[in-house]
Image 1 (cartoon, rainbow, N blue to C red):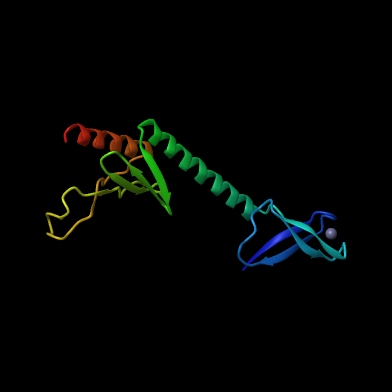
Image 2 (image 1 turned 45 degrees about the vertical axis):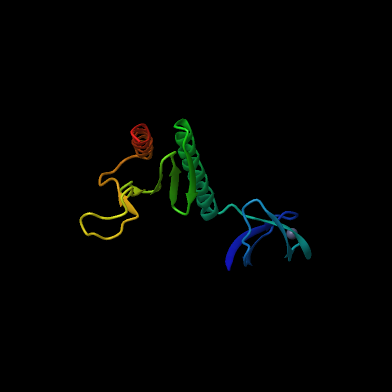
Length: 152
Ligand SMILES: [Zn+2]
């Protein structure tokens, strides 16, 4: 359950309402009883600091994803987003990394399915131990797989 400060669209009276799933999104209209109008009237969520911060976060996320899509497209690569990860598919392999934090763990599907140090099966290996920007990582992926494709 979530509490949201809402206002009556007819008289502007503000009141807090409790919502279950599916949660309303900012800008949506819904009918609630207004004590001032003495009837059910359309209400909408008030833009509180918390809602404004959520909207800002969503917008930043959207812009971040858009910049990654554009960068991938410039190399002719496709990508998709899964939770906190971006999965980039090249003609020869697929890569994934958390695009929100310092890019310490770029996972790459191993060509040789074994970890030579331990002898354990290894589906993926970590590519970097240093911080790289998202654009540097995509540059690296494009160059790496282009090399791999050219040397098949
Ligand atoms: Zn009202």
